[in-house]
Structure formats: C-alpha cells, structure tokens
Figure (cartoon, helix red, strand yellow):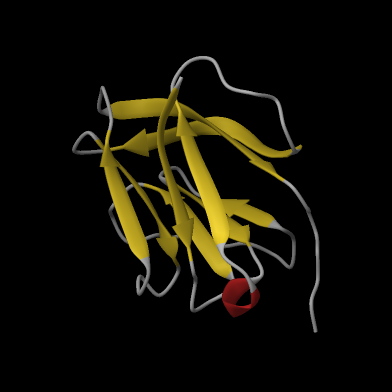
Length: 113
C-alpha cells in the first residue's frame, strides 16, 4: 500500500533515505551506498526532481533493484532528503527499529556531465 510520496529537488546529487540521524555512509563511485541507518542514492541533483514513494507491505516491482536490506529507523520516522539536508521530508511509520527497505530506480548509473 502506498503510504507517502514526495518529489525532492536536491541541491546535491546524493539523496538519503533512512533515519533522521546524521549519516555515516561511505560509498565508492557507484550508484548506491549504505550504512546501518541510511541508503545514499546518486540522482540527477539540480537537473531534475527525484520522486520517492513510500510503500508498506505490497509494492510494485517497477525499476531496477539497487538496494534490498535492513535499516535501523528510530523515532517511528523515515527521512528522505538531499545529503546537505536543504530539501528534506519525513514521514511517521508504523514501528521503530530495524525495517526492511527496498530501493528501486528508473535509470541506475545515469551519469550527466
């Protein structure tokens, strides 16, 4: 079931999904990096909006799978925003603690000069 959706216009080309705490993500030059509380996803940054949909239980299998794992989400909240936290959005979720998070993207590895 779709429980939330947001379009983020990121100032930076890295979008965070996860806890409201500050990230400790260390990623290479790949499209995705993660720590135990966040997923960092490369986006097109200021070139285009990034749409994020939050699903609970059943979800459509659209796009390419780039992350399927568990994140420790505190305070019954999930955070979506750019790495600089200039554009951000939070939503209350049904439970706190370790949650399964799946990230699917339309254009993985898209590089723009």
